[in-house]
Length: 300
Ligand SMILES: [Fe+2]
Image (tube, rainbow, N blue to C red; front, side, top):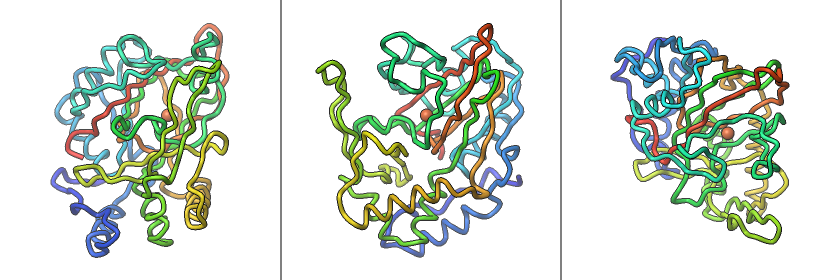
């Protein structure tokens, strides 16, 4: 992939009333867009001590696709400090202390059969459908930056599909800009309250699917699940959601798929992703570290 550090997108392309800005952005976005998973991968030494060249190579990919992958020399080193240090190099500071995170707010994703995690699919070996992280957070606490680091892959399975949410926005807007208007509606998608044994652990959350951040960037809040989700009840929203789901399921050159190996990880602006089901070798269970931030990758 040939990308110069000076290439930056035209500003504010996500205004539905400004089609000239949008078209300029589409042209920039699709020019030299990666088509192979390998184009997203940067070989690095230590995630906790990136060289300037490693940092710049990762950042260039994130600027283009909202994601980059690294393959480091740390192998299955379980040091959680490395993910914190990696995030800091990209301006990621404000971690989400979600309910299931460890004390340091970095989550160890592994199969955990205990009570707190029961019912939470990320802590099982079951597949996870397309989503962005933290779609159930309130709108003031959306997850803009997401890091994953693999300590130990599963014996079988545990692959991730990845899709840049800006590409999905473009595909939908090109079908019909009214789909975008429907999905930007402040009541487009409601996640019902999380109630366990009569206790409300989290209230219902209502908000748009696509939203523009104060800096003009695009953020997406989405889960592909069909139960425990309420869509705004109008024909255009139903049609937009049906098209969105169809596009997610239609393999395209923009859909990437891979399985993180020991020492490998994802640096992203919380792009759409899935996880396939997996089987562990009991002596070496799958362990991924996950850090969720209220910050985007700096400079994107
Ligand atoms: Fe996720």
